[in-house]
Image (cartoon, rainbow, N blue to C red; front, side, top):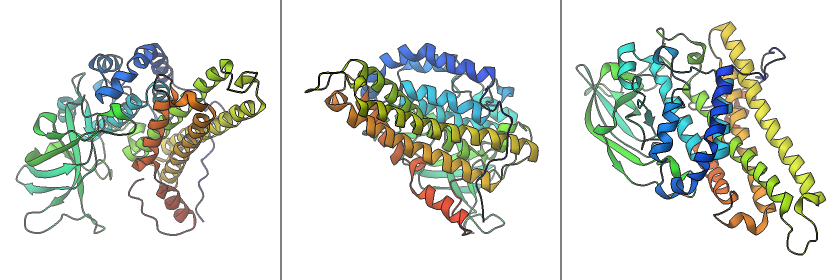
Length: 405
């Protein structure tokens, strides 16, 4: 039977690289500016240009880029605390940084001159999203036609991508050796696309995840990779980070977005409990036994979910470094820990929202937006209950769908 135990690591696993600590410190420096922009972010449904420029200047869109391009190339356990810290302040910004950062891992799979063209500029930011389409093979590249449902972070991106099956002229789909269709990631300037404004949502409004399309767009072969399946090995960027698939990094990052939302909610609830005297009561919420127990239980749940996710990433990174590749057991562990983090965070936010009473329903207070954001996170692919089923099938010796691992 398959197990999901992580291999042992040194006792100092909780210590992060000084560079990663520095990014967390920078988030805290930016927190007042970001927090002040919260209402504007929701209303405009995008991150304000001045905030984007700050994030660019401080390297937040280069967290997972190769050092050869000026990126930080943070390892997974170093990366997720930065995303969580951002999400404590604003979930839309954290979501976009995680999405754009995962996309930027593509740089490790590209020839250096292509990677430089896309990511060399400080504004070299890549976004992509799901959707049906096709890439028809032609001399020198592909003709791509497709519509994609949404692309988080596309408003401030300069390049877009898509994952589409390849057709070989009149011969049908190109197939992998195992008989599955070849799906390649196509990269192209955002100026080549047509956008449709669809992002009118309950939460995560600032991600600006609008629909986009291309029609018969020529994409040269060098701007195409098998980045999701990792069949194109990044021999020119052999860093340990790039032995992980972007799918695993997305999962861990979005799990950390959820943890950040919940942690921020807990901290705001504690602040509220100091002073609020509920109607009909003679003492503050802080002095109420139920509130005291609730705060302790929420802290335990979040700390447990966070520790499992970060410990797993640290342990798996050490094992991958020794072995040279990540295995299916480890990919399952990351997916399970990340999905658990999302649903634990959802439960904690719901508990605290209800406990905050009528205070929580007003826009002027911080609970309402976080409530909307965490429910939007849980509705996304990353929060699917199906992930628990996938891991359960694997542990029971069945043959699960590993498409999202």
